[in-house]
Image (tube, rainbow, N blue to C red; front, side, top):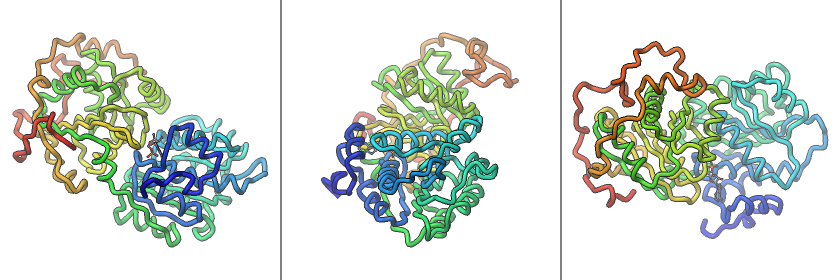
Length: 445
Ligand code: AMP
């Protein structure tokens, strides 16, 4: 759909104005394909992930439809419900609704757990047109009688595969049952992948849904330069340090597979006084939001995250995504690198493949339907580390409980403890197969 404009999709003036304010000049493929169907009232099964412009693909037509058919009741029940797997994603969707709907007067709010319910209950009491929610808290509020879904005209499930992974399906089923029957509502079902379980839900909750598919490799491959370094586990931190020192990496999302690895790495970075903050699932919601905000504002150069915590977050102008560990689930690879190169901007993803995680490469390649270009880092990127500025003990002692959750950590604070993986073998091995040995500078994604 080349040269399609938002006007061609029948998007009306107040939204066109808001889109111009956002700096969007043209719809992305998922928007061009999805918006007309949603405006026609059809159900949609969309295969796409964050980074494709998916949020606007469903929020714009929903806003336009609800706005054309305003409810004048003051204490109105919500007419659109958007479910998302994480608080961060729910907040972002709500922010998008605020931005795209700034020239109309629909009311919307976001509901998520981990915070007091009082303020959310109060807002719901005022009457909302749209609610964006994570399943657990929404179900709690429904069960307590604070929210009714009887008037839902449009039900959106975003990142459905992740909801399944996170064990939300029983809650989502109950929520679905609380909305009007599927022939009396419009259902939009988005998922990065459609494994059988997800397909079954999508089929049973939608009515003759139109399928819209945005190939994952289009997202990743077209916009993101992917560099995959072959590195021994023991050299990973050195490589990271040198990349941060030498590359013009300004805003970096650094992914680890496990929260203990993320925490150890974060502490190691603190030893070297690298500007960084940590986002992992065991850190409470308020702190996570603060840290995310501070990273977005540029107060920290690096955000160390795990997949659960980093899921769906949208941060403008991430220059680099670094996979300190290659993800076990190939989908996470796509999700991670999709944090950079968003909607037309170029991005760089750098992955570290060591003897512990290079066995994940074939799965990733199969999922991406392409070979990963594996390269050895230039010598300059393996230059010896300078001495750390602080000992690990000093870092642990100085970290306020609010910064690093290590109050209950009874492990010995040995100075030799490294920031690398915990499952390190005694002797490094070479990666499982002889890779393409292109020089990084020659490597194209
Ligand atoms: P999403 O996939 O919805 O998370 O969107 C990814 C990013 O793309 C967000 O930063 C959006 O603000 C941005 N975006 C969405 N639609 C467009 C568009 N048509 N043109 C440019 N940027 C967009």
